[in-house]
Structures are given as structure tokens and as C-alpha cells.
Image 1 (spheres, rainbow, N blue to C red):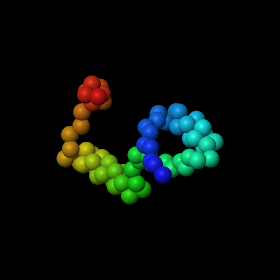
Image 2: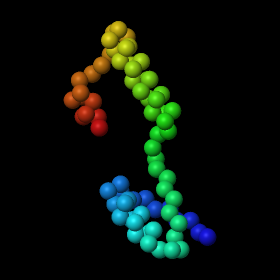
Image 3: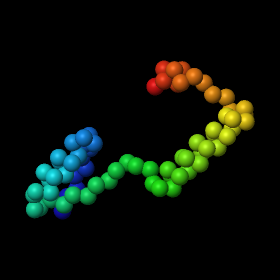
Length: 71
């Protein structure tokens, strides 16, 4: 058996999955690039730490427009 890796836009994923499942010789397994539960929790903890630092004045902020210009 061979393995084929395909990258698909999220909005088209359901269509492609349904199509492939119609073929009896194809087995579909999905891998997503999402953070694990622990990574999400740690990211939230870090955000809370940073907000506390901002409120104490230890961490300096910048205007949202300035941040968005960098993106």
C-alpha cells in the first residue's frame, strides 16, 4: 500500500474527504496542524503572564495599528 500526502484548503476538505471515501480501495486518515491541548493551555498561561506584566508596567505595549502594519 502506498501513502499520498495532499494539502487541501479547509473549505474544500469535506468535499475531498467525502469523494475519497466513495472509493473502496482508499483509506483516509487526517492529520491537522493544530496545537495540542497542553500547547493551547501553555499559550493561554503565557498570555495571562504577559497581561499581568503590562498591568504592572513591566512590559511595554504598542498601538494595534503599529502591530498590524508589521503583518
